[in-house]
Image (cartoon, rainbow, N blue to C red; front, side):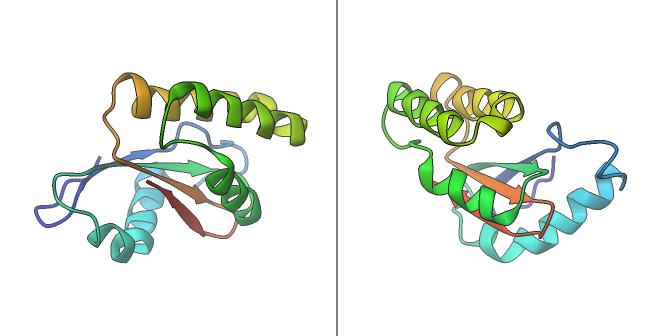
Length: 130
């Protein structure tokens, strides 16, 4: 976790990485991601809590997830959107199950995250889900 006085409270999550594919130390990844995201994260109010989830998926898949997930309204709508994604992309179902569970927990149950950032470690692109 990294805290800064000027920006939001940011939690980094690297739990969904393939350890074989991404052998860099967790801290190095964290620093690299925070530098990459620094500009975007500065736009958030300091009262915000942001969860950054690093994913071993393509940038295209991250963009698709961000645009398809319904995080704004109810947990029911969110669950329905995850089921639709699983139908369309069955090969990612097991991998995404834990990711969706984590987003659901942060967004609807604990209500700790005002925003979630999905990061593709394949091309370092990211999408913000408000």
